Image (cartoon, rainbow, N blue to C red):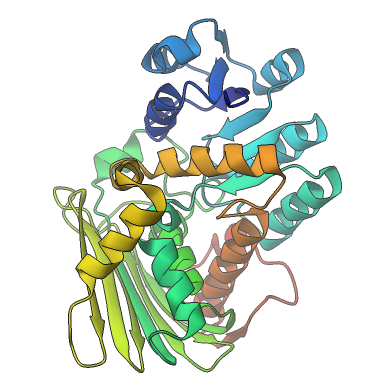
Length: 371
């Protein structure tokens, strides 16, 4: 039976939108690009061309409201600067569109909560761009951790060393600003924080943190450390930085359990994984075999472009009316955690989560001026 095609408008045609184009092109049996919007219309035209036949009749816009009003797309993929997410997301849902929303959901707890509430009110799906949830084997491991296969979770750890030079930040005025982007924790590390919390299967209840400016000439931090206390008593350690070499982007996630440990990561785009039981026996092949059995060989393609997994999951969620793997709640929760981390850095005190009062990245605007 042929899958129902969903129409897509891509709002924002910068770097990450290339991954959207590849996913839509691959899933041309499920999606049709009907519009691309960017203040640079040439970028929008390039986006359409990258979608191949799936974007054959797509229109170019430089005004996202006009695009949504004229096209009434089934899905709006929002790849605009983070500071614009709230306005575009709420408008699109009120107009009847589902969302594929890049991280972070918004730049404040209040805005993220409002987006989540509107998704419930309008019954529109939001698939968050938390890409690491869609990598092969990850969901199977998460389910086994939840089932107790590895025993009690003791702690987790992540580092994201995603180096960017000043040329990256200079390429757009909004990059590295408290208003539109945040720093290394908010922009580069939120994926990993989301994954770690999800894998550990429990909610954060307390945050402590420190942030610093070491090498990059930006408003926000280029280095941050945080510790989360989880509801089940386990702890999570977080490192995020852009003050490393841009030549080797690396990220690694580890979950330590009573009867085993799991480590996964990426180094310069190449994935690695190490799964062991309590006796130290390696279980990699067992989990790769499970992934192949459940999703087939094609499911491993998400290692090269996790957005392929997001788009597949969003289509399934809309057609079958179920929550995406990375849902509206997950988008809100990750922003709440990040704002708690920033607040902990600002106050120098442990911060209770979820936040009792809203906190915004703009509340950090004088942080480094005061040091």
